[in-house]
Length: 96
Image (cartoon, rainbow, N blue to C red; front, side, top):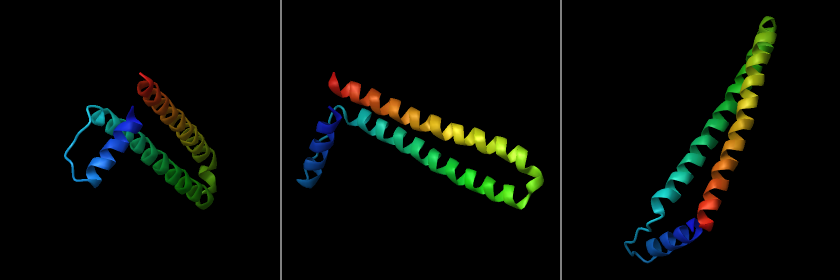
């Protein structure tokens, strides 16, 4: 369903036809939510990199920083799972 919405939207824009699919709002919401989670994932990777830099700079904080790095690394894996669930939900909605 959302692929059709995307195709119709692109074709109408190309032909300068003003048309909004009834499914357009849901399609955009899924896209925005997935993009938000992707941005969070990238931010977490950058934070983890900064924590590794601090760990090298301050060896006395190694144990504490390792805990933080581990927790954030676990979180980024959860985000991937959440994105997959949103995509699966969207795909199930398409089939209806």
